[in-house]
Image (cartoon, rainbow, N blue to C red; front, side):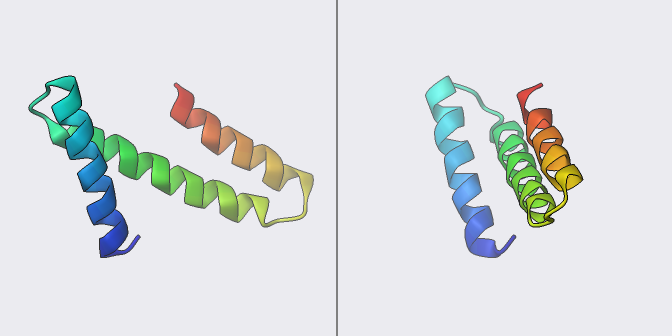
Length: 66
């Protein structure tokens, strides 16, 4: 993740915290960073042509729904 991506996530987190009337932007930021990292990992798994790669990608994405 580069600085521009981090800045974008921070801006989104700040907007969400303001919208929700919360003081703790860091929690929104942490959730956005974790989601971005899960997506990168899922894409790596999907790049594998084997069936297990698709299953791992689905499992990684499902972790964000808990």
